[in-house]
Image (cartoon, rainbow, N blue to C red; front, top):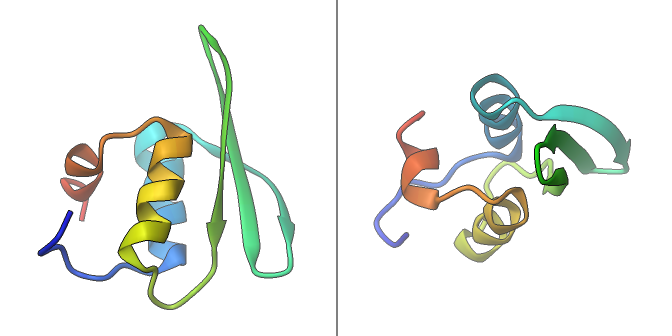
Length: 76
């Protein structure tokens, strides 16, 4: 994922909701919980509302959401 431009937590949430069908299931402080139901069960992830997410943080968010980072960056 090196070479990709930084992205905000707010933008990550917008993409996950609009493109991947996640819904906001709650918020604690600056962390937003997202979840969706699939045929194999419930998938959830947590996105911090920072102005710029570090690469490792974004990878963790996408790993929990079971989304390939290359596919995710196509929506930017």
